[in-house]
Image (cartoon, rainbow, N blue to C red; front, side):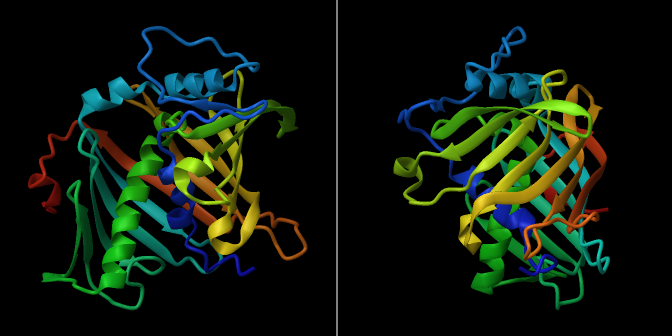
Length: 288
């Protein structure tokens, strides 16, 4: 497996985005409904794995609090440390409508990597448009990639609140120590009757029982023939205006012999984050 060429952020969102409504229940697994806003902290109970996901959502600040902030803007650096190639974008989202805008002045990986110039992607809640410098892009492949990226980047920002969507199947796998901390391991996958796929993405979440945050997880990529959760993600957080955000994410791809390198295959960082910018579907496009 060539670890430096995979568009991890794009594919990683695939399984999560497919999670939707359903009520199928299996032995030792629970199919859960969306996490609703809670007035008080939920009970964290390993015998009820859905309660762990509810606690994760609460620990991040709550969905209703995020909705009240209206929108967000930040700088997003998606980088391969091995060669320092990067996609660097100004990201902007409007939460209620899921409008997603990204403006790239450096794009060497996923976004028109062989085409110099400025690239903007805009998902208005219905369709995605792409501008290269001042020209509208009509290439279906570029538009398809941009549409997925706009939805996936938005999803990753709100992921703690999406883990409990209907159709998600969650089970508790016990505890494991990592980096001198003991974590609760939670398996998350998807009801095939809802996704329409025989093989669905699988995530093994390492939840810190003290902070209720997901510090680490493994995931699979059936899309690329990797059916077991073998890719590692480590998350590092900051709390900004009451929302706990993963401002650094590192990913480790397995080698052919199943081992992992000491250095990450991919590093994503978020900086210069601001909420409540007053964006509209028109003003969100304006770059100074």
